[in-house]
Image 1 (cartoon, rainbow, N blue to C red):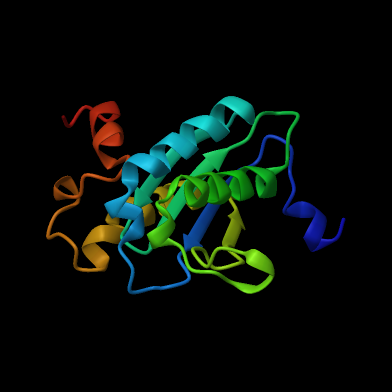
Image 2: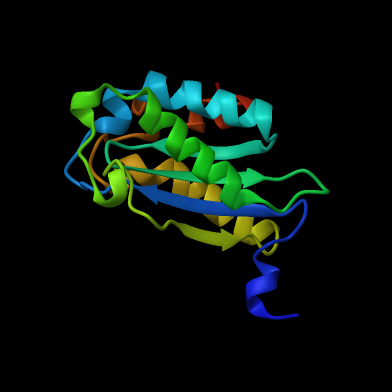
Length: 157
């Protein structure tokens, strides 16, 4: 099997990074409610399990698992990005080529999770990211993260 085909694993678990086109922007946290609406809409239409997520001002990281019979993560990411963009006020969007809205970078980073150690490393990376970027001193202080849910699951809440 080619490396390309291994990226699309039915029931696979993946790490993603999605960036705004303007890396100085704070659109994602300024309009986090709109992002959450898009997230809910996508998860109803194309189910997936969110294992970890963090929303930063200009980018987001996700670790998600797909249903056993489904490998179509590109559709989910496209719907998430377009749903958020569609909900934004017009003054938050700029016109791109062919009428595109210049909100997101066209591409995203994906990584197929290989094993439990890889999963744990990526979940930890996601939750530590606000500290890494200097937004907060402690993971507990960042409100746009699944860290709070994970901490409760581990019995630390």
